[in-house]
Length: 324
Length: 121
Image (tube, one colour):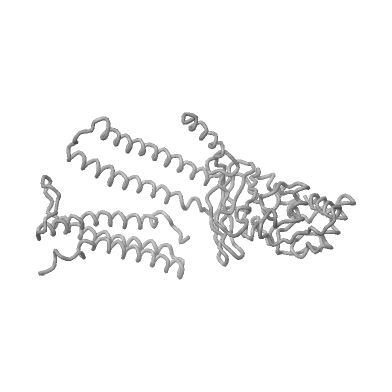
């Protein structure tokens, strides 16, 4: 049993290789942090072996009096000089890296606002006079550094995509900033990293890194108004959407829905996840969410629509599914 | 100058940590003030550098005097455990010397960010 434990522990290491892991970096900043982590881990292992080796040596291998002079030098060297030099080196390395981690971005600026419990996301390409508005998903072009302006509504949140870089707090009434330089296209996951209320743990996001030309095409598509419903059922769904007053809180560009309380839904179905990284973007998930958001995200401001008939709910989900 | 209570007071022993504390407050206060009021990282760095030089000079001076007070001789036992004026003097000098070392390291670590971080953010 005891012999099997280290192997069982190895299975957990699989968790380090994933979409939301500091240890599988896909951004310039995350690479630096991961390198620092491995060096520090290596150093800690060497130190552990040295300290325990010395203890073993002094207590078991040669348990006799050692010269006082030698002991004093070991204490001074290992306890004063060595840690001072190592810590000074680590501090200096970290300080050299810090300004680069926050280097100004070029071209694209994202403005992300932490809400309870979702993310308002605006894309401001260079020279834009108005933003492309989205929500709950961050898309970035690979190979360039994008500026990220952060704000918060109501309570403090923290913006963190571990695979891409470090985290930065979002503070109400104060603008903070960071920048990210993804190097590998792919799909990652971000998570609010500052406790922000009942559904803090349910406040995640998909982070999609795209090749620059794909990103430009995607951004252009996101700037368009919403797609017209293609089927009768989807048209009926749009009717339900407007009749139920969903537009009081949500915007669907190209329709009378212009609310700004909740996430912009213009291109909802083009997102990878629903409800800020919590549900898959599927019809059943849409229905579950609309019927009872509080069951999925406790404390969410969106009311439940459990009074809708099954047919209406289905039509609404079909309409939303078509908003690509 | 004659100090009648020179070796019964702890103040000389903790003089160097006090310099460290003053340096810490000065650097943080000065940086916060010039960054908030004037957004002047250059002034923040200059002030930090100046405060650090002054603090290190003061600690070096204190450390030197502590060293003399300790009266270190390599082959003497470094024990000051008898209730005599000499033991008290050497003990306080020894402790002050060690604290001066810690304070110098503290002052350098507090000042290091100013060398590398070139903005007020």
